[in-house]
Amino acid sequence: MHVGGVAYNGHAVKLIGWGVEQIGSEKVPYWLGSNSANSDWGENGYFRIIRGEDNCRIETYVIAGIMRV
Image (cartoon, rainbow, N blue to C red; front, side, top):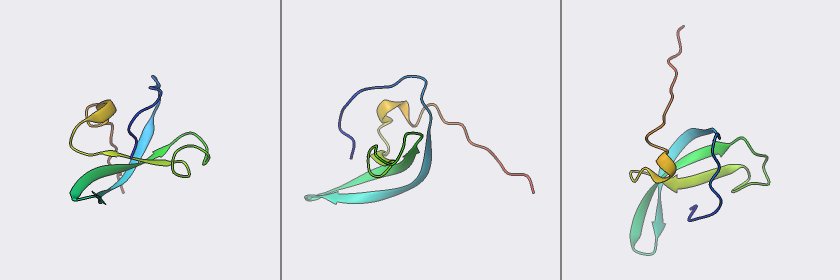
């Protein structure tokens, strides 16, 4: 789980899933995201961030598309 570091402005990420991680006796919900940086960043280019607390405003600034078939 990301707990700190440098904040970047003007950056986009893609949320690709979600899950729950057991940390001690606590279950922590998270979003799974993909970063535009290479695979040397984070967890092979991916990251987990706590879900439901709007950390880094990840739940505020959301853009989603609807596919037309």
